[in-house]
Image: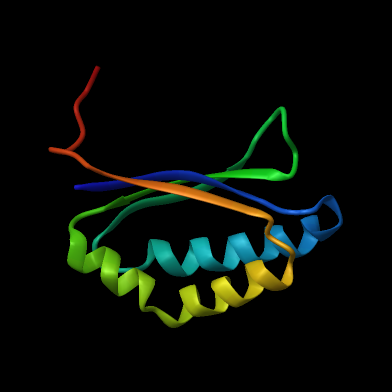
Length: 99
């Protein structure tokens, strides 16, 4: 299982467009084969910061996601919306563990 955790930062004035772009990419991504979860959440202390968490079955599924048409649209949209920061870290895990 691959786990990606990170954040994206946008200017306040782009909020409506950001929410629309995040909703579109989330809906399309969750339907992809190999996607275990794909979530964005706005940080409660930093309103212009959006946290992302992704879970993928394997590297092939993740490569397919990165090559998808909806990800290309999202890359274009986030630049147009003024994304000023993007930090995403990839982790390889043995899978989920109940705690």
